[in-house]
Image 1 (cartoon, rainbow, N blue to C red):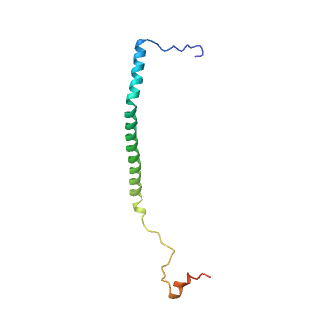
Image 2 (image 1 turned 90 degrees about the vertical axis):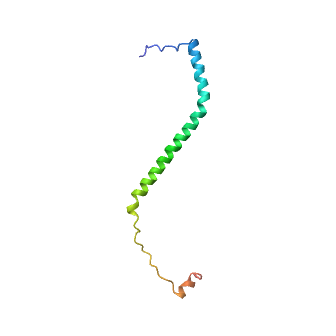
Length: 88
């Protein structure tokens, strides 16, 4: 492979015409490429985020039991209601 010769690209009128057509099509089709990529990526994003959130919610249904709390609901006595206003 060290002594291999890389052939030069063939130049000619047909190659020149095809090159110009290629450049013209790239200029003309670039906006369509941007729009189609935007649409495809948007659909893929919403499918990915939407499906993952749906699966998360479906999988999390059985775990929605509220945990026991350490807090006690004790109604404050009349003396305790005003004690927080005068901490010192």
